[in-house]
Image (cartoon, rainbow, N blue to C red; front, side):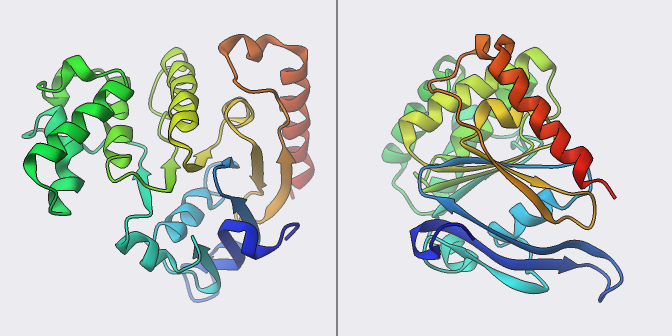
Length: 259
């Protein structure tokens, strides 16, 4: 890797995953490092192993070769000490709990006193623009609002790292772009490290400091792209020639990586 592993918050070292004892490789020999406070995207076509790699970071899968380090320890240690929050493709909210109750859940499981967890949940709902909806049920919210609740819940324990698995993929393009901009605002205020899985080139380019491009299955790291666009980023950036040049160059990397 280009940087010393000691400088990284997340280290992926020659990781491989095979679901069939050697006959069904999902990813092979991936090594990368992610710096503290960085926003990176794992970008690649469907089935290339992006989610598999993220789940290894989240201690939801064990690699069949290589290893993953999180915040100086193992993914298991990071999970048990609540160093990361996770946002999945679908919100997975509990319908029998209010919006506030859903955000409070990880704090409740951690034993936080009721008054403090209510206060924390309301702080987070204000942060994601849903303070007025704290008493609503998930079914009363739009898909984009539900995903904002999921993000608030993932941030409840003040994690160092936010792992996001295509969180906006089920949303329409306009909502997706708006939530991307809101996510950047949250990231700048919390200072956490973000690992964002997507198959959208434009989304990865707009959000990220760096983009890790994975090849088609079995996934390999085919390129690492330094984005270099100025921050803060606003929607009008997507119409700029510099942005189009960047997305075109990333698309070319995909074409070069195809077998």
